[in-house]
Length: 403
Image (cartoon, rainbow, N blue to C red; front, side, top):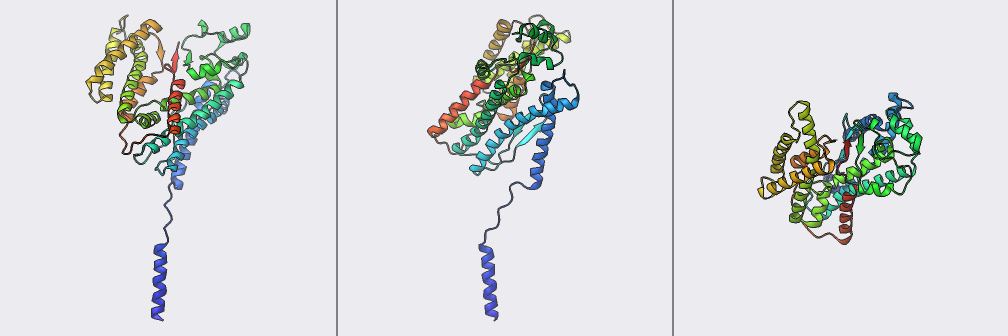
């Protein structure tokens, strides 16, 4: 009996050892609640701050009405962000790459959010996996934003819709007389008028629809504004530098050395846009303190110094790149300001100077080398170049500015 009992115990232990243990939960309840909480908080902030743009204040200026109308904008815009990030998430899951759920980022300014991110918990050393994870988010988000924009264009009300918004009396008077929007903001309303920058794709689509509002009134239309923002956010992510989505994609297409060259040139273009924004801002600020001269010499010297240290950081003290990019960037910025704009008084959103520092100090320009580099198959290559075309079509050199 003892031998039989020992035999049974041995078989039981052996069976227990051979049974695989259940895999650990990737996302526990606490983690899920944290991400859901961030999403809810972001929805609230986007509803509030988005409502400042889209709420029909001449009809009902109450905070309740603002939040309800802002919630429409928040639903559409956060749908884009969610689809974008879950595109990355499911591609990573497919390739068994460890990632977090999307983090939605609420902020109490602007449109109420800085976007959403997922964090990859391990280095991706295979260019196929890198490409799939990088391209899936922008392409998925692009489809959603394009659909939202097309819906917005196809459901446009007539120009009298502007009567629903307070503070646009001159535009409303023009619309009442002519039945269309004025091409430029009327002088009576042109003090600190916010203008949304046009893009190649937006302007192409707009020509097929009637009653399209001018860019200085477009942000009152929730679907147009959400669609434009979605496409612009897609373009920002597709910028082919560092470990942005575009950096992953172009690295997979070109390899380390060629991508590094393209990324450094791209950063030089970015600093040129930053200079076009920053020099007028510095000049106007110095004027308010009584320190500016008419030609903006001090403003240019300050920006040249900032640009030098920014390029040193970005190019790792490589003066073969710093000197020519510094000179070219300053020359092109000056040419645009004096020959195209014609004034140092223009004010923009400063998005490119913020983005330049963000890339130089956090994202970096060069993509880390992958362990396994192999040529992409034809389908992936076509998708990669399509994503680069989307970047060109959806980026705006001057996304938000005032006149």
